[in-house]
Amino acid sequence: MSKIILTGDRPTGRLHLGHYVGSLKRRVELQNSGEFDKIFIMIADAQALTDNADNPEKVRQNIIEVALDYLSAGLDPEKSDIFIQSQIPQLTELTFYYMNLVTVSRLQRNPTVKNEILMRNFEASIPVGFFTYPISQASDITAFKATTVPVGEDQEPMIEQAREIVRKFNSVYGDTLVEPNILLPDNKACLRLPGTDGKAKMSKSLGNCIYLSDTEAEVKRKVMSMYTDPEHIRVEDPGKIEGNCVFIYLDAFSTKEDFEEFLPDYANLDELKEHYKRGGLGDVKVKKFLIRVLNRQLEPIRQKRHMYEKDIPGVYDILQKGTKAAYEVAQQTLEEVKAAMKINYFDDKELIKIQSEKYKSID
Ligand code: TRP
View: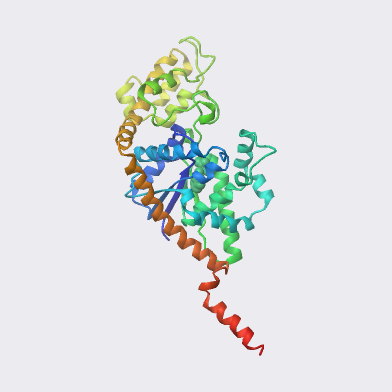
């Protein structure tokens, strides 16, 4: 069986470090591993509209931002098809049929939906489109027969729901769809990178993000004001590592080379942590190290972004080519789905023959 990747992001803002360590960095590695037959990366504008229906301009503006972030982080249009969700109408059509296979109560139990309803103050007024977006996400995945979906931990319930839809579809209509597997980051700190304020999640609305496109100076400013251990006041005080953003970020980003080059007094992160816990290590020193660690990873991304920013029509071309390739694959799957559901009347020679026979026998 082919190995196929499908994943994507909502274009509601530029991508940040949470996106990067949660999924984007991994995608680039998988792309370059050469182990996959096909890689589809989707800009989920239709999904973004499920809770931004009154603000299409925001979604429209951010499509290019996300595309620039993708390309600058190393997604290569020669190896991955980058496409725009709303331009693949087959996805909407699949969603309509999958809706018959999912109950309202199952959607209500989806933890991601539950959580997002809370975050968006949607309790009493959830748009139907928003409520059903897990079904639409199952269409995104199955339309490409994706075997592997690299995403952050928050997407786990979505992939589970997609797997259920596949099993249900295949059991009702016969083997047609492929059950996807989630691929989570293997580094615990990357599973859910907290915001710079220590809140559970990096999120644009909380204003606690470091963006891939932030300048060196912005990264510096954000790290210097980062949440650490509020009880670690004087350098001599023993400090706490748990819930301390600076150390969580170092867990997610620092490498052996970073220590060798920027902080050779410590062999590795464990030694640095031990010193902090003992006392005698100030926040500023650790923060300065983190700034260098982050900037080392972000600098090549920034440079690549500047290059692509000079050729925006070229970026739209890349999206259009990717969308065309995605369209063809989704169309093929839709045809198989409709044949399995027996709603392919005009292609079904057998049906026409049977119906003719039925009426022949009448006269
Ligand atoms: N829900 C994802 C997010 O918010 C975006 C997304 C839409 C997606 N469809 C997908 C991710 C299919 C993986 C597979 O980030």
